[in-house]
Amino acid sequence: MKTYDAVIAGGGLIGGAIAFELARAGLRVAVFDRQEPGREASWASAGIISPAPENQSMIPVVELGKASAKLYPRFIEQVEEASGLRTGYRPKGTIQALFASDAMEELATVVGLHRGLGLACEALDPEETREMEPSLSAEVRACALRPEEACVDNRLLTRAVLEAARRSGAEFFAGSGVEAIWEEGGRCRGVIARGEKIAAGSTVIAAGCFSGGIHGTEAYAPVRPARGQIVALRGAGVQIERVLWSERIYLVPRDDGRVIAGATIEYAGFEKALTAGGIHSVLDGAMELVPGLRGAELVESWCGLRPDSPDHLPILGPTDVEGLLMATGHFRSGILLAPLTARLMGEWVKNEAPSWDAERLSPLRFRNCSATSY
Ligand SMILES: Cc1cc2nc3c(=O)[nH]c(=O)nc-3n(C[C@H](O)[C@H](O)[C@H](O)COP(=O)(O)OP(=O)(O)OC[C@H]3O[C@@H](n4cnc5c(N)ncnc54)[C@H](O)[C@@H]3O)c2cc1C
Image (cartoon, rainbow, N blue to C red; front, side, top):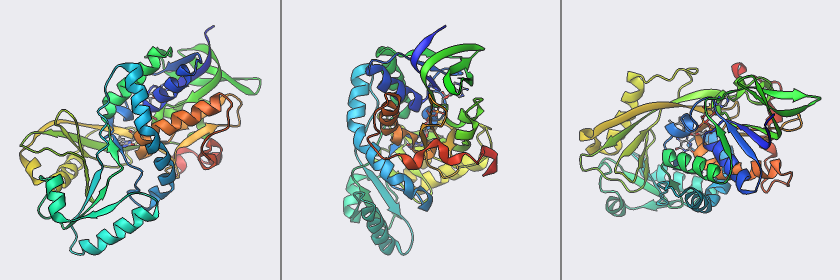
């Protein structure tokens, strides 16, 4: 029987980052994925690294996001060095554009709100904004700069993290879905994948929105998929340097000149279909923010399933079954939260005290809840 220090169910960015963290600490690690690793939400994402809340419900994630964003530069360095691959990390900030007739008042609120949460944010004058991002719409009435934010090419990052984990010694088993945890004698002894038992000291469930489908983890992973439709555009002389936000849409630059525009948030089960209405709303918002995109080539459209939890916060840490840990529910922030998640999971697996107070994220908070009951 194969035996590891840690076995991870799910080879997305979260499972990959945890594998990298554990493998470079010298642990024997195996990652099981039901398909080719890195092809779900972590592939479909936009790659924005922003702890700023998009709405009220995201305010509880801010402190966690700030802590993870701080780790990002070092995380990128380590991943690029260990993998020999680039990640398209762009620490160039975000511009938030306001269109409303009372935009100047709104700007003061936006700046105040961000600063109140300890996030850097400053009002830009129109002249400055045009110099920084010449393709922004002339209809924009006011702008705020969030200088400490960044973005990354999430597909490159995920590939690099998986390679970094592999080169550090983690073993990957693609096409080997985990069916159940292997529970015996009151503790989790590993996983069952393709009918075979794989023994491990620690078992980490990091299967994104599919985590609750692994038998034995249901009580800790009431996650449900939140579909996001998203497109890539190129050309028409449009070049943006940093992430642009409006109330309706975000635009994210890539090093190869593409602009990613996204994304819808829909609760449509596990159905991964693009819809006319979804793509229309994304394109409409994109062209409002940068009218030059009207002539851009639509190079790709896709969708992905974010792992949402009942309170929209990640589900991280040990359960009350010895040896079983959860790392799921990252919803709209899994790219942002990967470095801190990896660090915390590493600490728990190695029985070290967590370096960040993650009590509120405990998998035990959902014991009376299921994915269908919210
Ligand atoms: C359109 C869109 C835009 C987004 N934009 C951003 C953004 O700008 N910034 C940000 O921070 N976040 C963003 N997100 C969210 C982010 O992408 C996710 O939170 C993150 O990718 C979750 O990573 P994960 O590894 O947990 O899940 P996933 O990437 O979904 O990986 C889960 C893995 O588990 C595997 N798996 C499933 N079932 C099993 C099983 N039974 N056994 C073994 N393996 C299994 C899957 O095959 C997959 O490889 C976005 C998401 C979407 C969809």
